[in-house]
Image 1 (tube, rainbow, N blue to C red):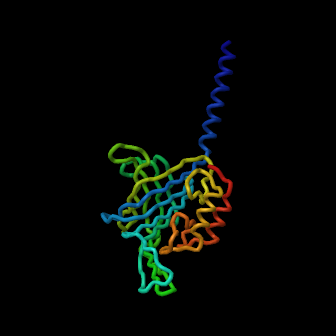
Image 2 (cartoon, rainbow, N blue to C red):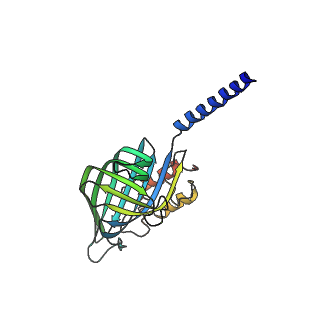
Image 3 (tube, rainbow, N blue to C red):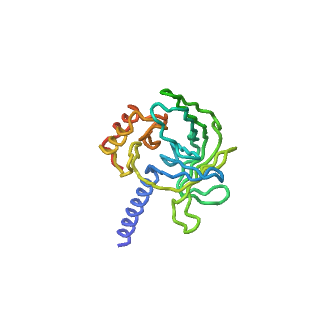
Length: 243
């Protein structure tokens, strides 16, 4: 009997170790979408989107502006000029869930790395337009931290994008998913799958850019300030994917 108990115990221990090994190697993917509402102490409008594979890599981009982008007529009588800021993660050094930083503060989600920030200005004049991208920060160290609500402690509620020598960008988390399968870009309506509705959303905005009706930064998947065949191709590439 003692030998049988020892044998069963050994089998159970092996199963637990095996399960631990499987869990240790399970990949974790994160999608977070947020609404930017402040730049330093300045109220702003904007959004932030992050795709990440924990302990590995991340793609983050953000855009914000102090005023809504105007809808520009095809041939404006006078020049229309507007600007906005964008931030891009260039290289990630830390990508963690439930990360405790050097100040002993634990964050729901944390990305550290090198970031670039640009001030982008669009100019529409008569039937022509051009845009200029002015670098503000080039590969500066910074972090994206997602934290609980400071009032009621609801997790995954607020975020801060803090880049060295730049005012912090803050906002509210609108949507997040944590999965063990890769989360593709292209889920425009955030329903956990890429289907004809996402293709239709991109098609509706096809050919637009900031200042044109139906342009949406969240549909500009490759973030080149225009919605074109490249964006449709990125959605089509992931068509039929569920996560």
